[in-house]
Amino acid sequence: MEKLSIPKGTRDFGQIESFRRKYIIEKIQSNFIKYGFAPIETPTMEHLSVLTGKYGDEGDQLIFKVLNSGDFLKKTDSDDYDQGAKTLLPKIAEKGLRYDLTVPFARHVVMNQHNITFPFKRYQIQPVWRADRPQRGRYREFYQCDADIIGTRSSWNEIELTLLIHDVFKSLNFDGFEVKINHREVLFAMAAAADLKGKEIPFCVALDKLDKIGTEKVLHEISLLQGNVEMVSKYLEIIAAAVDQSLKIEKLVKLTGASNKGFEELTAFFKTLDELTDRNFNISLDFSLARGLSYYTGMIYEVKPTEVNIGSICGGGRYDNLTGMFGLKGVSGIGISFGLDRIYDVLAESNLFPETAKGGPKVLITHLDASAFKHGIKILEQIRKAGIAADLFPDSVKIQKQMNYANKLAIPYVITIGSDEISQARYPLKNMSTGKVLTSSVEEIIESLKTDNL
Image (spheres, rainbow, N blue to C red):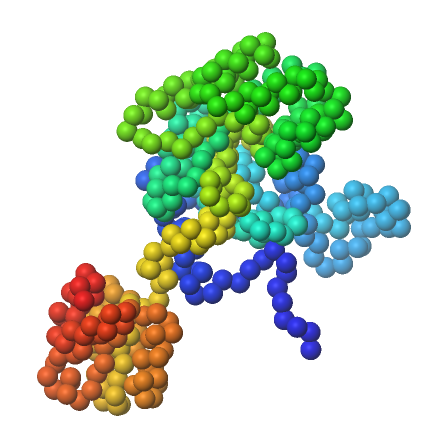
């Protein structure tokens, strides 16, 4: 018999993992709602014509294609095989699993434009799939938690999403992160000044690898692009310089000889942040940040943990032309995406999950005989009506086995019922961590469970 397994890059989640993921989702979702975002959902599958051409060549290759139903080879012939995958693929696969949530959102906006009031603030929490090579922090199936604002070019949106990022991580009691900011138009000005006009995307891809491959290898890639290596070397000096954001912008404007909208928006962005004096922002300007998705046109974000080596845990940016690819031009949008799976890994490694994130019942009712079990049903109903998660052990077994069950599931409290407890209408509530016991009425037990006062 073949050994049971699951596909690489996917994972099962047990009880504790699932409750912890639910805890993260609830924190993120509550902040989305607090900021005025409304939920939508889109299908797992999209037409490949919707997905392709939006993520760059590398991204397109990572889309999981779905074979046509039935005889998927019926539209093909031997010539298609001879001409290779690009010719064969459209004839055998018309759909793919969504690569991210932003492109399906843009498709949704275009299809529903007459039913949407702009500006539209939406959030979406759903899984996505990428045919990537699995490694630490990189999965083939993972959840994204997106918040987007579309139908407005207001610079307040960039500030709004920055505030949202900080509030989400604050609600998770996590402050070991840094928000990196850059602008696509600044990157394009850098490319032009380095003799790489028309090669902006390869330039961005090379520069974005700085953290991973280092200065020398980045300069080598620039030389392969036939760019001005000396100019890019000066860029890297500015990137590494320990100076404030305004001085970095000033130096780069002078070096590139360009003062476009990107530089102006970055300057205004940091000026507005400085005016929000009641906030403690973990934010920096990083001219090497490019982000791989080709649909970004303006300011871009990336959030990385400072003490856990796992890559970005949130990212996003401004996109001006995405709905235009589906026929609705002139509708600008901006959004960020929190990576649930990486956030989970970071919180787990940092021991930041509260005990309550384990989930399960708060109290287990145990019983000594059949009449005690029947009486326990009534008590169970009372406790549940009070909004407390409770369970009744289902089998007639020795009390020690019932207590072992509570210990294995880390259930915090246990109530034990016998004939004496029934006759006196007073029941022992045991704190399984401290061993302390409170013998009291059901009403008083409920109050103790609500306040954890035992």
